[in-house]
Amino acid sequence: MDWPLAIDRNREALRRIVAALFVLAGLADGRSLSKLPRRLYAAVMLVLLPAESAVRRLIVIAARGLVLKPRAPRPLPEGLPAFSAAGALRTPAFCLLDPLKQFSLDDFDNNALPRFSFDSAFDPAFDMPQFSSPDGPVEAAQLFRRLRALRNALNSLPRQARRLARWQARRGVLLQRKGPFQPMRMSAMRPGPPPGRRLRALHEVDDVLRECHGLAMDRLNEPDTS
Image (cartoon, rainbow, N blue to C red; front, side, top):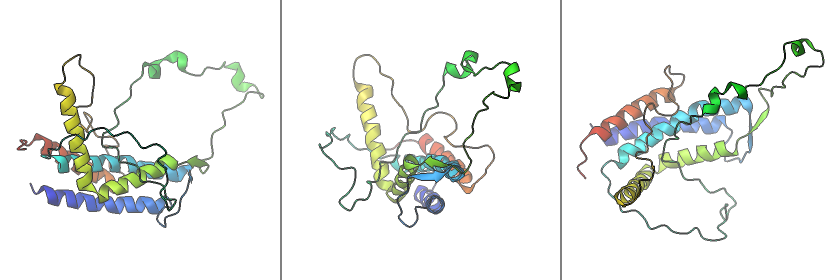
């Protein structure tokens, strides 16, 4: 397998997708926004999550075989500004690890469901729930940070691979320590389907994610010659 070629082909496809997301979100001209219409927010999120998963798998492929020593922890300098001298928001670091699935017994607790009497449904004074307008504004600052982090990761894939290699080195050090076992992430990719995977493709990003996930699994199953 020509891994550099496979990485470059999918990275270019993801760059086109991310560039389209920036245009869709109104960030292509460098504007700084804080909110988006609800429908637009949902349209961006439809693509963002699988795009992040695809980029993580490209990083896993690129990091295979890299052996780096973990960096010594450094304290964050006091008074570090969140903005650069030019006033631009610092680009956040791309999250290298898949979000884990969250399960809660509360989801199956019938007592947690809202209840109302049958008679009240015909009471003119009964207050029906007020749903937000589909075009109402939604706070999107976190969404914009994720978009910027995603674009930065695509433009600095070798650096992201080194970040992952250092994370793997730290994990190896923790596994060698004596004492009671502490739960920890064993892989950047969570077990099972990747976050954002859809059984039926709705967007180009779904096909890219499917290919990147398959390539990452093949890469991890190769013998590690490092």
